Amino acid sequence: MIRITHLSKSFGSQMVLDDISLEIQEGELLVILGESGTGKSVLLKHLIGLLRPDQGRVEINATDITVLPEKELLKIRQKIGYLFQEGALYDFMNVFENIAFPLREHTTMDEAAIAQKVRGVLKLIDLRDVERKYPAELSGGMKKRVALARAIILDSKILFCDEPTSGLDPIRSRDISDLIRDISKRLGCTTVVSSHDIQNSFRIADRLILIREGKIAASGTQFDLKASNDFFVREFIQ
Amino acid sequence: MRVLNNFLFNGIIGLGNALWFLGEIIGHIVRCRIRVGDVFKQVYEQGLQSVVIIALTSLASGLVLALQGYVAMSRFGAKEYVAHLVALSLVRELSPVFTALIFSGKAGARITAELGAMSVNDQILATRTLGVDPIEFLVVPRFMACVVVLPILVIISEFVGIAGGYMIGVYEANIPGTFYINQTIRAVQYVDFFSGFIKVFFFAVLIGWTCCYQGYNTQGGSLGVGKFTTKAVAFSYIFIIVSNAILTKIILTFWG
Ligand SMILES: Nc1ncnc2c1ncn2[C@@H]1O[C@H](COP(=O)(O)OP(=O)(O)O)[C@@H](O)[C@H]1O
Ligand SMILES: [Mg+2]
Image 1: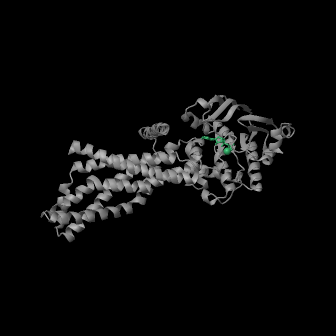
Image 2: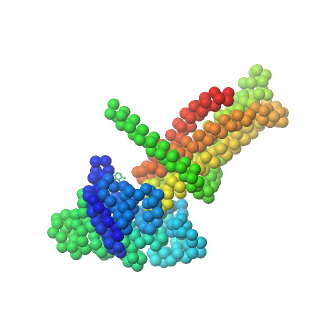
């Protein structure tokens, strides 16, 4: 379970997160909605310790990660998958090496076992004949799939995805959204996805929160949000 | 006044961050958290990239030094000493400084551009999310490679430069070949070689430090990569020139 309590973060005089409290249950798929620039990425980065809050705590399975030194965080992050907006694949490694990288770093698996595991994940993300390709030779959607494969290769039980549909056409957006939902449910991951893509968020979310001016403006299932009388919520989801 | 204060303030913060960064790198090295395979890959790439232009520059320097020296010294009937002139100039000053300058423009720029591109594409952050220390994985191999490659390139530069001088000395000034070589060996003493290498070591650390730091902290997309890369090369140049002056003074004071 992930518990965020009274989380605040400013950059200079700009308050980005203002006293956010939130709990995410085990196995739940939560979508963070918000217009761009509202602090969705900043919030996700706090959940994995890439940013430290000014105030508040982030507990992952009852461990407050905001006070851990980087060395401890590196260990905890091995159990968390993080999908960056643009994938952030190593461009000096091909697809196979990218996906195998966490296995080579953190396990003692031999090459045969690694190859087998990578093939299995490639099948899961439905990509074929790309193992020897480099990220520069892949389309945006393929990059995100490969990055997703790299994020889950260590059998993470927690998955964070930062705007998985941004920059993709409607069909690819739907595919990657469904894939995230599918993988999340199949592996039983606690999943947090940030997005400003209403349609696909409604498709996949167990629960959604809407962020506005650093606060949670609304929270609930898609039906709760659709039934909301709040002017801003109605305008955002129209 | 306000502007100056800000400037000083940022300068001090920047220097503090850069020193902390160097401390991190050295911390990894003394704890032997070095990925030897990656270091060799970097050594190979950085060395291969710079060796031809450094050899060419050194050959030209040796030739020109010998030509000028031979003409000037002939007036005093001391053309035999051209071997001394060439060898000492190269070993003490020219090879370390020229090699370092060229190296920072090639390998240094490459380091900053590579790390910078990784930084703006979130690959450095991604490394942390994968539970891997980016300093150990991406920075230390590049830094170590500088420290390994630069001395090798300087030795190559010295040999090629001396060979250039030899050609002029033997074919133009008609100094006997064995005499020229003997003079060279006698001219270059252990301390010259040694003092040259103290400089080279400092240059390598300065280049590796500056270029890794700028690359690691690159922001602002592809424009940022360009900006930080030029900044890294400019800083490296300044650091090399200034530290060379200081080190020359210190070395001459202690070893004459
Ligand atoms: N490292 C940083 N330094 C300063 N400002 C930042 C930093 N990261 C994000 N911000 C600011 O925080 C705000 C929220 O950014 P972000 O979380 O990326 O928005 P989004 O919801 O689109 O993901 C933006 O105004 C951005 O300029
Ligand atoms: Mg974002």
